[in-house]
Each structure stands twice: as C-alpha cells, then as structure tokens.
Image 1 (spheres, rainbow, N blue to C red):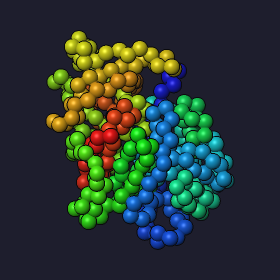
Image 2: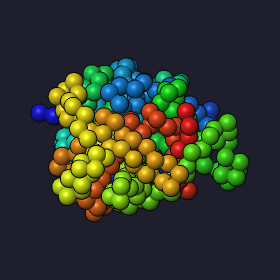
Image 3: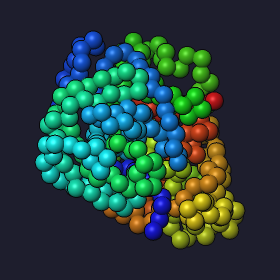
Image 4: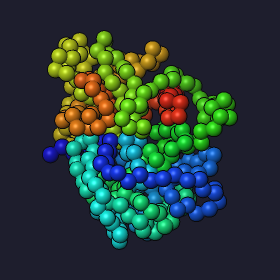
Length: 316
C-alpha cells in the first residue's frame, strides 16, 4: 500500500459555515482570522506544513492545507468529541475516504501563537488516521481556506513562518507584504470549481500542463499522458530518481516554465495514480497535471492573493 498522502480534500456536504465580524479583543466563537496581520510558526513534517495547537486539551498539530476548503476539521481518531452528527462523506486526492461529522460543542481550540477560540459550532470532524499513520501521529486535524478568507498570506519555508495580511484597498496599493522582497515573477491564476485551488498553465519543452498550488500536495505530483511521458523521457526532461524511504518511485522534471520570467526544476516528486475522481471534483479536464507543493515552496517564498488571483514568487 502506498505511503504517499496528498491531502487535497473534498467534502461532500451541504452545511456551510457562515462568517460574521468579530471584535479583535474578544474570544471568538467562530474559527476564523481577525486583525490586520498575524503570523504563525510552522512545523514542516514530510513535506507538509503544520500549525501546533490543541483541541479540548488534546495537544497536537493541524495541517495547514490550502486544498482543504473548510476552516477547521478535527481528527476524531485522536480527539474525543461528544456531539458528533454524521452529515456526509469525503475523500482526499490520494484516495482515502471517510465519514464527515458536524459538531456543535467544541469547547476550545488554542493555536501556537495564542489565538484562542471557544464554544465553536458547526465544526467538521472525521477519522484522519491516514494522516497519523502516513505523516505524523499527533495530527489533530486541518486548518483550511475558510479560516483565512479575506486575507492574503506569505508562505516562508526557510523561516518556517506563515503570515496573513487582511485584504484592504490600502494594502493593495502599498503592498506592504512585499517590503524588502525580491519578486521573481507574478503568476495570474484561475479558479474553477473550488475557490481555494489556484491553477496556472505551465510548460516543459512544448508540453503543456495544468499546475495546481496546494500546501497539502506532498513533495509535488505529476501526471502525464503516455505519449508525453515518452516524449519528455526521451528528451531527458523527465527522469527517474530512484525510490524514497517508503519504496515509492521518485522523478525529476526539468525546465518547467511557470511563467515567462521563471523556469525551475522539480527534483524528487511523485506520480499521481488514479486521479480521475479528484480532477472531476475541481474541474480539471487537462490530461497533464503538476501539483506545485513542497519542492516549489522550499525553493521560493510565495504570497497568495486570492482576492486578486495572483501568486507572487519571491526569492529566499
């Protein structure tokens, strides 16, 4: 059985968290960001970024997963919850399936930088034992897109730091999030079925593919048609890179043009298997696909501006 987990998560439910404004000084009853800007220290485990915290006194780490649409999801295999009601089912891109529950009695959530939430309602939970088994045994859930709606963020794997900036007209004009940075390129991305999945067109030696940005995308993932695999392999743009410690095949993809200004290499990425279900869920019809994840984020700082559909690629 594969040990690879790529955690682009899809939840088939009808319930949606409703956002409302909170006073910055108040304890929040909804799991979402407040304030103008705020930073979190990151822990990187097996290519995935985590934010430390605790739920109802159980300490652990939340995966910061941009592929997860919801604000918060709790791993009920690790955290006991008293009021779960089954509301649907979901799956992640690497194939694991699970039942989804809704909870109206999550007493408290504490994050590593001091943010504190209590009496949370309509919080999702599921058995994420595959995250415990495949990545880290103290994974207590996900933090996803709805947590930071209305914010852009800077992802810095070298400093292991995640910083959010509230979208405002003044910030859009001043771009203080780029102060002191060397911008290598600006990527205009598109959104299809899901608002949390940025997509761009990239190219290798005339072979076009769709690129997806996802912090939950492991080291990076590839999918090509047999014809394009043969073409790229013959021209030595695509090469085998041996096996990793879990006996999974690794690959190198060279000369990937992510924009007119930036061409890069991906060394040590995996291939996607059986991707049809998740491609359909996010509206991908292209045959060739690359998920830009750890190998990209460890080479470049990125700023993700969902409101203006731009990703700024910055030099470390």
